[in-house]
Image 1 (tube, rainbow over the protein chains, first blue to last red):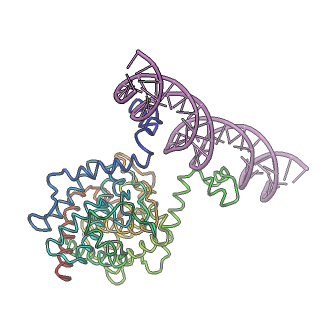
Image 2: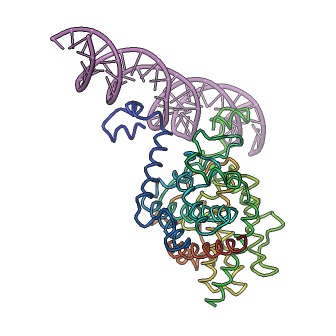
Image 3: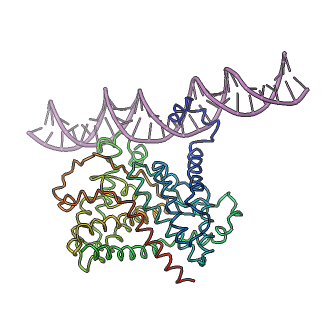
Length: 196
Length: 196
DNA sequence: TCGGTCATGTTTACAACGTATACGTTTTCG
DNA sequence: CGAAAACGTATACGTTGTAAACATGACCGA
């Protein structure tokens, strides 16, 4: 805060006239970054050329955000702006809703859509954290999934998130780990035979 | 430090008689954790039943460590005890050496082994950070890949690491991202058709 | 034009943190 | 026995986020 104050030519305490505290300031930064993605022309709101294209665009959109703000991205990945049972780095309710609607529109069942959400977020988190940390970023605390913690935000504007909430917050880590590991080994086998 | 001091029934400053400072203490914690994996009977030092089995065991070993110490694992993933150009969470030189030797012994070319190392670490980081953060962990700063930074540790005991060092520190993030994304989409397509 | 309210900024202060420095003790060993 | 090493404590400093009280100017209705 003092540092930021200096930067603005002002005492640290002045900042508290505009922002309730450090945490809220960081939340605002995250919100600004997330909004950036909404303006990315490559990223689209619903599938035009199939869900693969849609997800490709979304993934690249998130990646561009991450690379554009390497030092801030871990923050984006770690804040629980709204629902702590959503997974970083796609925790913004708007985006989760967009994601689910898009896949359903493309013929995904509920389970398939939720499973895709899981795989997609885990993929993004792993790759992007690795990339930005190589660019000198600090990875701040990833946030806690408090047990009974419920949200103050209404889910009304996000019907799919609300409807699938239970499924979204289920913990499948063990199975996912096994499946992804299996698949990783297959891929490694492929590379092995290609370059041998 | 003060907290730890209290816990030990001692003033904070006493700790400095036994440890140079906070950072070194954390390094020691990480070292202890890494050693735990060396003692895991499921994890083996070189392939017995093929490299797939070897990697399965290694992956599960790392996962067990992560789940056993969720709050500490991010530290393991983020410390650069030795070589900053190695990727978390498998940064321990002994393990990297073991990894490379194992794959080569199983017929991997240099490039294939290094590529497998990349994929493997990225996979582990993504999944495990996600899992432990759901268990209430703080993800500390991932460390920086300082540009000219060289190690004080000798690479002599780790011939493969030394030999492949250049390849290991190459940055292929963009390609890796595309490939992994492609593969992710394939897997999602599979799930989609299975549950539809 | 006056007086009040509100937005904004400053000052001072406090608790928590890691740690430097100086000063006790107690233990060990030649 | 006596010196040195090992271990612990007391005090202090700089850095953090922020609470509380106070100052200042702009604006606005009477």
